[in-house]
Image (cartoon, rainbow, N blue to C red; front, side, top):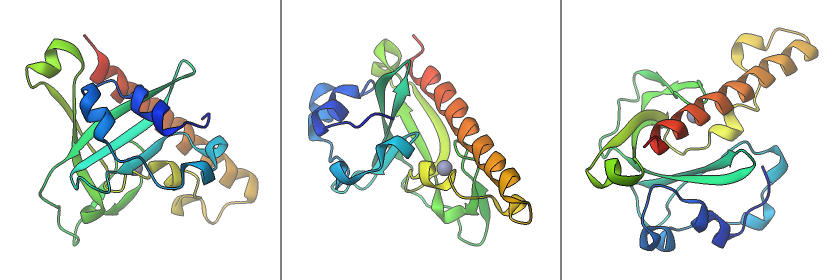
Length: 166
Ligand SMILES: [Zn+2]
């Protein structure tokens, strides 16, 4: 994705009020991020424990979604899958997030919920070679990574479409 400033991140938010967007805590070290390799910028709000954000690009424009994490954690003895990046990890590292829908639906309390990596760092997980491909040669490993990236992109677009459907 293209590099974003703090102001651009705040402007990109589609499902929260202007004052909420103004109050959000952007990720640290924005200038040092390797934007070109990022498919989505996801982070938890350092000052508001249950809040998190996903910013990605739709038709070339940044689009940000504000999320709220469930305040209960799942058990670390079980495993769970992030429904955006499809990585499987300890259930304690996956959280149920809800996003308020845009427009009248959102004002009426309508939300979209899904399970996502608790740290919202799906972008870095999809660039790692999946365990199922570790025994394959380099070319096939690259293909497996590419499939993960494409999958994340597709599911993120679908989630965004749900949140922004009027
Ligand atoms: Zn994930």
